[in-house]
Image (tube, rainbow, N blue to C red; front, side, top):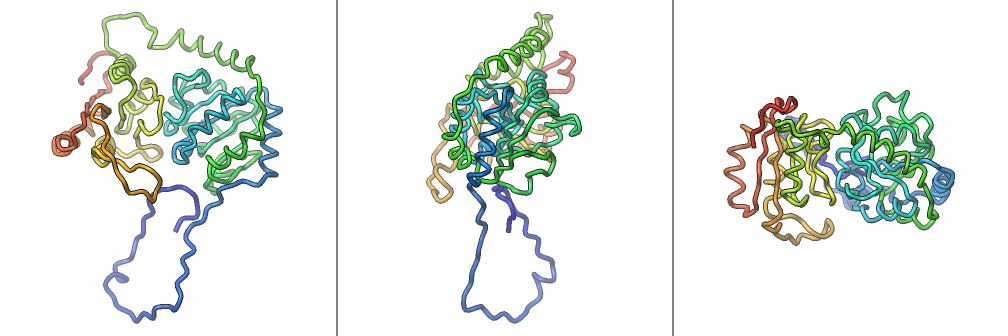
Length: 347
């Protein structure tokens, strides 16, 4: 059914005449369903090539994508980053896989990411892409994307390899498994000069950041989202609709843990903000795919639904119907576009 390793829904579209017409069918004596057997490990030869690039790199950077969370490779990512002293930048869907407060965290990359993060990528000499697909919102113009960098791409979906960006070492396999195999092969490295250079860019960006503006009596989105982060202790499950507010939430709600950030990436779906938390309800699966035990989400685990005006009206009745019976608190935040000018706020 699937030729790649993404655990995503598959649409089976059966034509109308096949649904209503009849035919004779003889059941076979033996049924063999091969299913999907993805490649989970990369060959040692390619791992050795990757180690060679890592050893020679002076300015490496990790690009953390949603695949880290899907593979449950957060611990392996941390081990690799700390052992090799490699800074970590995240795609929008990779946020939370690496703690935002960690000294090696560079936050979000790409069109709506931090300027110093993008500068680090552009000036790097080695990119380690972990479970991400080099989307155009991340790369920008491909002709000028990280021109000096060698590239190592760890990805379970082989169709993503070389699709947008040509890479020097493709490691096709499950990210958690590949990193588990790779970590023992690399040594501890010192990239203090590289980290200091990035810190200089960060300090310059911070000096112009809206978070450091003097109080002028106006309410800005960045401050509102940051205050929500403080009020929730960073422990809320944040869902968003799609649009400018989605990027505000990604930029200013600092995520420390995975699976606290639920948003529609890629072909964004308007109205997405409400269904995910209500579908999860007060329950969610635990354990592996074969484990059907469920547990209730603690009532002190707050949900913040950040949406725009267009999606809010369609969601308000849904909220009233769903959340009282779930026994978990939810806060809805309406961020209007006029907040860009710091004029109005509705919450």
